[in-house]
Length: 476
Image 1 (cartoon, rainbow, N blue to C red):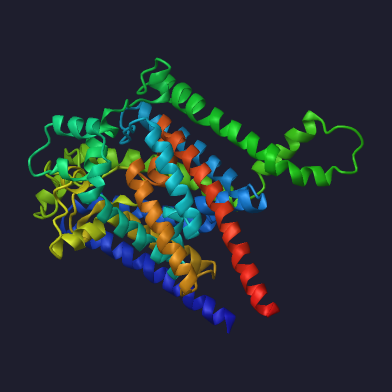
Image 2: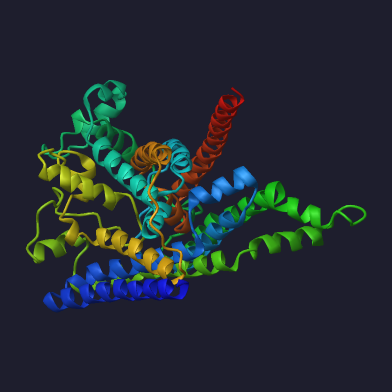
């Protein structure tokens, strides 16, 4: 019976692959511009397979580390970041990178903190929730919906929140001279972006050290070595001595005298190599992330465009383009923004004007989800995770309990707010930025780690409190 079920799941996996292949072939046959969307699709598919195979989830990584002292996933994430950095550095040095650094400021730390608390509450980060949705996890789907609805609403809210806006933000935002269609004076997040974030410096580790980032010295010495490898190494050493070394101490308890440098080095190496599955997933994920930038920029050169909004105009679908004729088209792995666009598009259709704010109306647009390249990437990520789960017999529909649903919605809302304040999530604001030598990525990461720590402590306190209540009832 088990063999029959496994066989059926494998058939479903092949059906999914065949369906996406059919979409790519048929749309390309209809119009060659669709190969741009298909590129996003297949990279998203690869990301989904990697995430599911390696069980990559930032929430799980920090929860496992802070709650039970298991560093495996943190190690896997750092491996993936370094590998992505090596590939992206080559792309950057050759002048065909699609990456753009983010403004550097304390806002990234605060945003990361809010996001970190939220991902622990929800039981999954943004990318982790996407791949878990592909496994049939209903709670993860609620997380994605909560993140998306929160973002789409948060970017357009003004009212009483405007009373919290400093006068300097308001004046700076109005001074930017944005088009009248963008009602920048009546939106909290608009004034935060145009009046505060946009005034912060934008740089990279290479530029901070005096290099030109589009050179091999700048890309590999400034961004990779100084901006990625050394900080990642320091982080892993800290993780080893606080958490990873404990298992080594137990193994060497019989040894007389102090543990030598050689013993510590051996333990550190064993921690790095502790999970081949996670390491393999990190290897493929890192390489794929770098290659996507290379491929997308190559297609932009081929079609003579700078943004997918031009492609949508050429195929006669200009609804939802920003006031500048653009749509969200990062050119690399990204999540949360496109999910917010799904909801923003639906809200617009239902009568909520979501095109008078900076997020949708000036930068990202809300195009038809069926023609949005980043949408294809996220949907394919879910599908890729589903295929891997089916092939490994790990796919199973799981309905959320009422308690899990509350945590998912609450955590998702916090992640949605953190994503918009930080201009990205655990992928866009941390993983991609860090790998490309952006200091703002580490700032978001510091906040995210702090938020995850507080989230784990709160969650443990809450669990113990609920357990105490149940035991008290039993005593009665």
